[in-house]
Image (cartoon, rainbow, N blue to C red; front, side, top):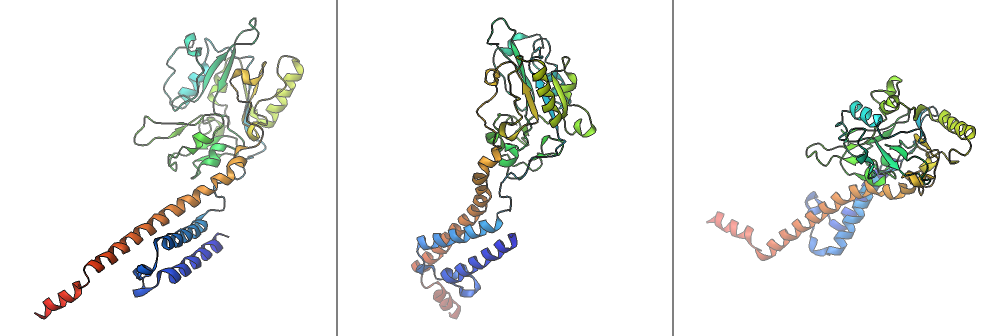
Length: 348
């Protein structure tokens, strides 16, 4: 199909060049452009550029493709009723060490870290936040936050150069060597996770939780944060088995959990899933996301991006050539006898 598009675009551009630009001296740009109005020229170049843009448009055209992954892909089930938060935060410490990030700035016993909800950033891939229980008699609720590793990641769908990919094991990984720094991934993510290294002027990257894919999951080991948790708040395993485990917990402890597994269906499903004793919107989780994968919502819009990237250079090149030829014609009108003058000097 791409070859057919290229052939059609080539024929269209060739016809437009012959029809509107002439072919004096073997070059379409050396035609007498006095006969071509500015509006007509821009229309011609725009049409040719659009044709070339369609020819260069890849088959995927920014679409997400299929990120459903391997049926045996991994995941993590987080039981927020078990997290102790204060005097712990070992998941944060382990994450920083595993990913060569700066160590936590405040010690685990420092309660001030929970005064304001935190989000992940370029130097912190996981954070624990505290939320007051609706029942004053109950202890506060601590919730760990990191990349959700969506089954159909919006960040990967929005990326124009495939810097983000979903592995069969379930991790959403990032390749900085191809990243162009557009940061569309940051806008697309419904969980506000990807963060940009604004403090790196030479080679900034987009940073987020890696699911310890390269250092642990590929070797059959649990992520560092899961392994470091002393209360077994997080359970690592096959996503399908984790869903069964969550339902078993809800059935065995009736009334302890809300009847919902957060992440089972949100935005098409996520690798990280949660159980909670209170509605999820009360512990900082978005409940307005729906179950439709985000790539399906943005596919048509994002498919236009490669077309725009292909069209603009051609369009501006056309403007440059038009202006250049117009100046040449203007100079010839103001100095109509430069060649005759040179001939007379030669004869003399």
